[in-house]
Image 1 (cartoon, helix red, strand yellow):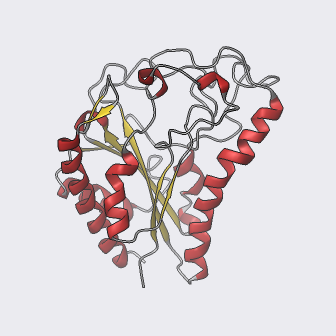
Image 2 (cartoon, rainbow, N blue to C red):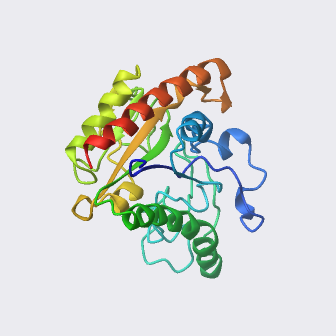
Length: 267
């Protein structure tokens, strides 16, 4: 039986629906500033070849951030929100990019906000919960999720580490809360053995996905993995470097293979 393991990729989507008019026709370098562009392509070959279940976003994060919750809004993003201006600039609905470029000039209507939740945010999370429920129905007491992301090579003023050069991989578990230690060590070791330089819980500790689904007391173990974008793309033009990307694909496949095999000793 296949191990109870799946991968989620919440920030690689680039689709923008017609009703999200404020994101239409933006310059590519702004529209793609904070998208985890190409992460689905980098993980895809390994997921397919090893038949690892996966949930991959198709929608752009700026209007429905899947690693946030609907409560992560403020006066700038949704009309009538009770949270004060500037609280969730990069929240559920992004007001600016992490470089400070404006995205939303005025807060959206509450009805549009409700439709965004139902049409674009909820389906992804239904799929994630469905993966847990499927493995639970098969009798597994422990299930393991890897939430795959990418990050800029340098922290911006919107980050916890402005100007700091980042590791190749940052692995986060909400500072020990979202998964058991054995799973964390398995993931860290796998990426190191694949040839990556790895750092833990800095500058990221994990987002709402790890916070929501990482519930070790319920047998749910979730960890976040951030991949440095400078390894495979031009961060200014947002274009992929095919040669470097192919090398990263091989490394990711090696890491996932070690994790996939190692989970057998954890369950």
